[in-house]
Amino acid sequence: MRSLRSFRRLVRWTPALQRARHALRADPQGPGPGWVAGAGLAGLAGLAGLVGGSACACEHRQTLGAPVATNLEVPTDRDLRVVSLEELRSHNNLEDGLWISYHGHVYDVSNFAKIHPGGPGRIQMAAGSDLQKYFDVYHVHPDVSKFLDRTCLVGRLTPKDAKRSYEETIFANPYENEPPRTLQQTIATAPRWANLMGKYLLDSFRTPLPGFYVRNHFPVPSWEDVEEEYEFEVGIPGKESKIFKLKDLRTMQQSTVEATMICGGAALYPRYLHRTDNRDTWEKEAFPRNEINNNFWGSHAIWTGVKCRDVLRLCGIDVDAIALGTEPLPAKYLRLTGHDADETGSSFGVTIPLEKAVDPFGDVILAMTMNGEPLPSDHGYPVRVLVPGYAGVRNCKWLAKMELANELHESHVDTHTDEVIYPPNMTFEDDLAKTSLTGGTVQRAGRWEAQQDNNIFRVMEMPVHSSVILPEVNTTLSGKEASKVVAEGLEVRGIALGGGGHRVARVDVSIDGGKTYVPADLDDHGMEKVHRRNYHWSWYWWSKKVPLTEEMKLQLAKGQPLTLQVASRAMTEHGNTQPSREDAVSLYNLVGNICNYQTHTPIVITPPRS
Ligand code: HEM
Image (tube, rainbow, N blue to C red; front, side):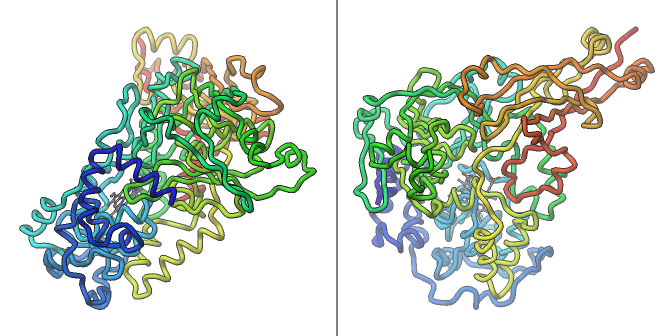
């Protein structure tokens, strides 16, 4: 119910979605279970007139017969059967199969939809139509034909029909009216994903708000003009839910927390598709991409808001007794749901341990300001849950609901997308290939789902991490700069974070790709005095002039350019540290979450004139 309310808010706010809503109204099925799975979604995409035609009575898998390709073989176009536009469009629901066209090929993505990182609903939006129209908006996708061709190819369209399929697919961009943005380097626009890259991260200890790291999953809900309508609900089993409005929070005692927020991905992009052939592509394709920028996917701010435990206390939870252990935990988790939802109405939701929320030193607050200003829309205006030490995604924006529960949140984000660490034997294409090309399609998809329960866990606290920020990747130093490096050493600067509130005890720097290290000078900007107990939520900055070895100097003296591989490794006071680049290869996990390996920053020194 709540997610429908959020969706309505989005619809009211976004003109593109308003247009889609009209299309939905024209759809006789209207919202409901059939709507999610069927032609209603095509209506949402403005496709009602195109794909809502006669339902295909046949069982599509039977019509397909034997798989057209094995895992690694892609048939040539000559061998593919020609699919008519009508047939493509008739496969627009789960019952008859979800088919899409892409670059002239037709694919059955019925099984893939279940594991689609962007959620099953979004694939259903495109059913019976052309994928490219969607990818024109959702730039998060690289060219996916590589694995679609290997996994779920049905046939091809004639060139004329391929053109028609693209041209007649009408899709209204739900991200047209996102808030204005400046400063950041954009990774993706729909949904918004952006960060301050490289040297700008070291411009100020507290990141300027327009540059603060953003990772949205859905269009931004706008509360600016209607903040008096804003509310969130607290649900406690066996009790009536309690509603809080902004004015309720504003009259409560405010707390301030200095905290760095870092992405659960910590580093890796792009993910999935660059590693579909086998795990080795993790190093060959994903690592180099990751190392294009000196990126630390996070930012720092001072946050103000109401303690989460104070809100729970008002709802009748004895947070002090629970924290002291004199009362048992009433539930394992606190589930957080946002007012943001995907284009099909499926809400954002994540889980945090209830223990963290009631811990008087856990510093979980319902934040209303960042750096002394109201939260910007991109950061959850008016209320975001700040969960210091935890992955960014746990810090639910645009809070709509908090509920005590013994089960994890069932949202797609919490179960599939950014939240999970998959076991090392799991690859995207393997599972996908098996799901789609064998007769037992559903069981294979089940393998993926089964993994969810067994060996897959959720990213909660972040691990220790550090990044080299300066010099920037591929910097070339020559002339006086090169002479200075020879005389004084290479000046390296960067950022480190203990993760989970752990103190960073040391950062070591290497200029020879991790063969040898020297300790850097740490600067905590006085945060040691600010943080309570043993928790340190803030990033550290560090710097070091690393001397060249005699061998390196000799190489330059011979007139040969010198390439250095700069790396850093932070270590907590427990001795936890970052894996080397080599070790990270075997630490492969499908999505690339908490990938805190020591990236390499290549820089070149050209021989200075003596
Ligand atoms: C067969 C068709 C599709 C394939 C193979 C596909 C594949 C993928 C993959 C691999 C990702 C993860 C990308 C990454 O994080 O590096 C992704 C994410 C995403 N996809 Fe798709 N996709 C398809 C269709 C669609 C459609 C039709 C939509 C929208 C209507 C869509 C929306 C998204 C969004 C929004 C994300 C980002 C989710 C997030 O991380 O927040 N996708 N898709």
